[in-house]
Image (cartoon, rainbow, N blue to C red; front, side):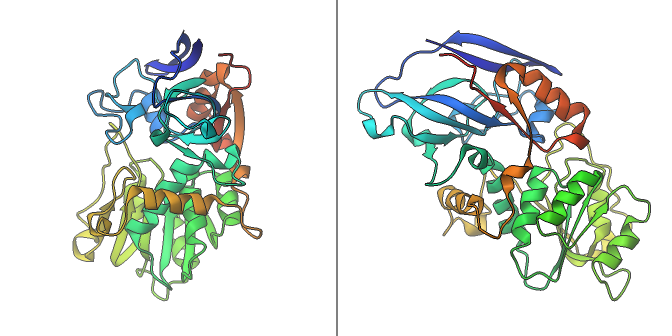
Length: 350
């Protein structure tokens, strides 16, 4: 049996390779991928060669072992159907739709412990959002938004939009988002932001003060999320935040450096800069929370509510797996036209 797998081979270079695939052994299952989602954050850093080559990909996920050096199979949002099971695996697994934190490839052999059956009624189109929704859940847990607070989200890519959608469910004082692309700002308003402003406008801070309904120009946000992936946006996030406020930094900049101004008002502001990354839980929660509990919460946040937004509308482009290089080129060169880009595997033969 053979499979098709996507390899990052050098900066801006991808190739789809055909390679042999063994049948499942004892305790294993064979999954045929139906849909996988591209992360426009981390995966574009890999695509551009902007991550440290000696850094571990993810020490918590078996399918993502090793370092970021080329050539590399990567990706972590795959939905597939179980085609076959090995000895000692219940035949009930056959035919089930499952989610896996797994690279982009047409088939893979894994264990039942490394996949999650889709909840009843969950479609592959919604399930591929699970990693980014888990990230959004983690961002809220790390930021701890309070009732009546004024919250700003800088960056309205997929993680930013999902974070905005969760924040909109809370009884906040104000919820304002910032992004440089008009289409993303429109999406943000549809997901519950009360205002969405152009992050690149020269008077953005003045406009933001009005949107937050500040009673004093220098009051600022209680809580700001920096989710743009752009190091320059960290300065904007700091300028946005008021005295003793919190800035949660969910962006990963890779090799890029953030030249931030800590010599002005920041020094006296008692502001807190908080790093947030989904591969771990904040230590103060580990007595009660586990990754499994957080994942179950992310699944619930993906469930379609009758009056809620349709998250599947955030899928802007679908590419057949064989055209994967075009998908990454689109995200890299025309980000203003793309949101969630997914790869489909209908034409991949085993």
